[in-house]
Length: 290
Ligand code: PMM
Image 1 (cartoon, rainbow, N blue to C red):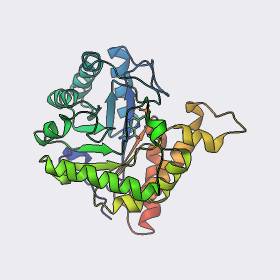
Image 2: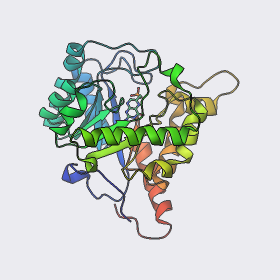
Image 3: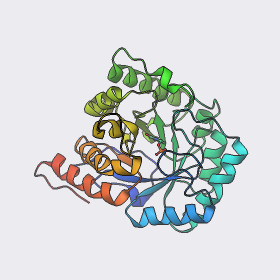
């Protein structure tokens, strides 16, 4: 059974017959689950290697928090956080994606060896992003986004969230093509938790096939997010991010059964097993290949 995958991936990540695991490495003081733990490059590089050893097919290095309410950091600060870590992980043989909304950070990270650009704004935050991508040969993850973290909670209004997100992602795909980006390189992402209330996230997860109908591979980033905490909550007390791992693993298995290309997670080992289960489930007795 073949899964759709983007053109431009390194050979080692092609045709694996199971979804890929993207390990999260936030080189930030304030991300909701791992913020502040990996600000020093030595700690970040050690964590990146650990994620790869634990089964991350690629490690997603981000220098800017996107948690609700987070404000932007200067580009110099983002470059300072991200580039040395990308360079050292690439030197260590780790496949790296760069999590950025800025064209210059994306281009410089790719020049330093990053194999994928992951943009939570789908090219909307920086007018230079799409033209810059046209000159890069790597896959591009375009996430559904409606506005910066400071205002995104006010933008969570939909007539029909699945239809609206699908239409808005189709619009990003069109804009990418108009800018000269090969659509075969594009991965789409519903943007769980970004201008979405819990019911919106669940509707999108339950209808991934509607987004897959756009003809592009999908990436799902549910790991430890608040809407998972809300499902597990007793009364008003949400369990902390670290206590949402089993719920994350459940989403990974279901996402694999739905045929996604990649999940973005904090704990690669746990999700890798779940992806194998979901893949076997999807194969339904056929022979999964991995
Ligand atoms: N979520 C976060 C950051 N980057 N990238 C993609 N493609 N999809 C996501 O859902 C996504 C992302 C926020 O979570 P974090 O603080 O754990 O990095």
